[in-house]
Image (cartoon, rainbow over all chains, first blue to last red; front, side, top):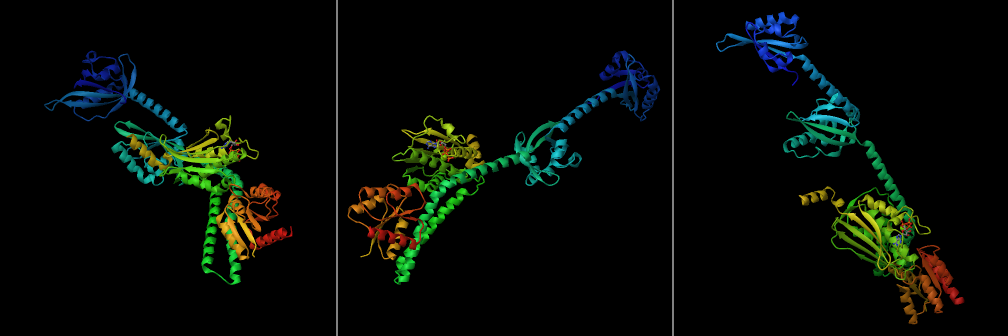
Length: 498
Length: 125
Ligand SMILES: Nc1ncnc2c1ncn2[C@@H]1O[C@H](COP(=O)(O)OP(=O)(O)OP(=O)(O)O)[C@@H](O)[C@H]1O
Ligand SMILES: [Mg+2]
């Protein structure tokens, strides 16, 4: 409430009847002390005595009198600026009974205004020096303020956006939905974004869409709501993130290509087998047809076998291609035991040559988890190959490998263990094995396990080593289930919790 | 009386195809899925004129079979089949007496020439 209203009531002749307490305070005289004094000699300074006297007389005559500006004085002679007006009051009979002089202490008004302005300036300068964009909107969604950083981020001057709907700063589909959001919120008070920060998209004046982090606060101002949005342009951060992801993909690709060299020998063998069979059948039949005594039934049988061997070779190529293809992190719901058998297929030749006995245990009806299959298969290939290498180097007489998949409850996930009966890793701290470049092999790179850990980390999972009993090593890989369901899984959890 | 060629390879489609090919040349062929199965038939007195032997096999591999034959003083011309050039296993087989090596996959003429050389050497030796 800016300033105070000073009221003096006087008889038609000007003799003061009463002062309100603001007036008493302003002039430093109580009502009773002022009683009977002429209002125009007590209140104004000497130069305004006549003005007020004329005004009071006109009001007593029932005329409309213009307001005046001037100076009043205190009991001690101090002067202060006042705007005042007059008003005649009629009694029940309709005749004029008294006059009222109403003054506004301008000094007080100006003081308050000055304070308000100073506060506003300070507030504005805080807003303008903020690095984050700050804007406020009313219940109607119209923009009420827009700071410098917001101007910089969106490319609009404040004057271009003030009073317009905030949805102009959003690309579709946010734009179309925003009014409904706001409306729903005001009706239901259900928070989708208020009080929470989240990543959304913004629309610049030049039409480009950019990622931004938005947090919204709410203030209640004299019954209405004002929403404050704090906006951070995260284009750069996103770029760094996606570069890091690309870099990681490159690394994973490199590691795959590296392990390719070893795999290639085994895979070449797997292609040579069907080719040998195909050539055998085909050449045999060319000869028999030339000799002129074709038994069509056995010819058909050979053709069938040739086709089958062709498919066998194609399958090897498919597997190989899938393995080296540069995989962007591409996650799909998948059954982990399918990856286990794929990894074993890739290493089939090595396992056979080294005479490794393989046992696979996986429960039926496993839940699907969200994984990048190629990468997880690479992890399994690394673990199995390490186990084969460890057992072969130690000349284990009957090398055995066990791959066990189990579903874990707390936390929800799927775990695969690769168990061997090799020499184990002795006194080496299990975690050290995962360090990049840690190797005990003559031609090892020490990249296998460290790239496994990188992949598993990126999946939100865990990978660790333990000694096996009575001997050997166990490498286990755990992947979370909640990832698979994405938002769905989270919803599940909240429903259970509710 | 056609010459008898034995094949030892753990890969069934390869065994079947090679048997057919050898027969198309007019030879008589028998195939075995493992070194052990071949040794068993040898013990039954079933002696081939030539042995077509795969190098990479689970259990007893080709080189080990050749070493076993040498220690049993069984003399049979052997042609080694391998999918991998110049492997340590191949060197070991050569030390155990292998003269002929075929790299998989191989052509029919290549196979025929190898077998004929092996048979001729055996006949001459
Ligand atoms: N199953 C295992 N049993 C015993 N030691 C193991 C086993 N798996 C891994 N290790 C140890 O961990 C080390 C690191 O393994 P890692 O796969 O990271 O590298 P590497 O196998 O030496 O080389 P590469 O980069 O070619 O894979 C190995 O050198 C070995 O000492
Ligand atoms: Mg390794």
